[in-house]
Length: 443
Image (cartoon, rainbow, N blue to C red; front, top):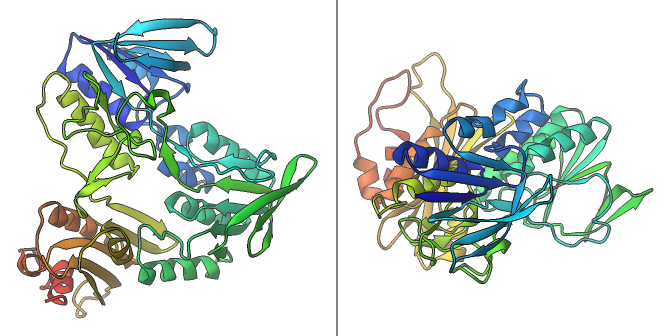
């Protein structure tokens, strides 16, 4: 069996490793544009802030490691076209410029995502950078050293983490987003208010509800970010506006959503025979809403890449979907979420949505110390099903959202969650678990 993999970040790496583990005799070839694989971009801010000493540890595999598995590892090779009818691809060696063809029995498309880059006036000025891969990270670190004023555009997880990292380095930092709140897609207002307040206390300017109109510069280098509401000095600008599926290669040849996300079935198969796809280039089954959505997360990609290998020869293991569970640390605040926020549920579903929020201490007050924690439960008033949740505390209690993810996965109701069995031990929690308590508040 001849297997070709196009792209090698998270889903591609896991698809390859599992394919070689399951099918010892498979001939596996991977084509990757970059000279590295498996970079954890979620660690870029940690690298920028010098939290981690060695950025190379953000790679969990390497071309050499794949080659040792017997994989034909083709770095710095660009796949230029795919002919599904003849099961062939055309490839360009970016170093030698040679163009050649290869053929497959099974094709795995793991093209990943790419930053959204709107066409701004002045967008070609120097020191306007993207934030996605290892090379971007090194460029950001290099340019940040000589910069006093840094503007981060986009207040999703990557943007807010970078803003914190720049502030920790002593930079005058501005965080711009067109939405009214930071992390608007992931958290309701109760939680973003706390995060925004933490940024302001540390001197970061929060410029939400502002749309970038253009960049101004001098001698070919950016000096100012202009929005519809103000101007901000900038020696360095980092674009973190969001991501899109990187699927132009197969556009018009395979079923996709309008945004370019490849449509797959529950066994990771595309609309083309013997062609599989996984990771940030694909749609996911979003369990809380019961629909298909584009949710580019490394956790999704790893599971999907693993499933491709499991189903490569015959349908074997179904994709269970996702709750979009995620977490972030903003200064001392540990924040996590899973499923739908109340705002997102009202905007994108027909559910009769409600939510309940409680604030409690994480363990009994007779203990020497305890921490305040706020937790929210989002649910459907008609079906009583749990749809989502969020948590914040100065103590790391984020694992509660992993538990709640399983609750949503299994279609549990508020009543069931209120009475489900959890352990009690004064060192860790209260007799009535936080998840029990927040569900009971919705009864």
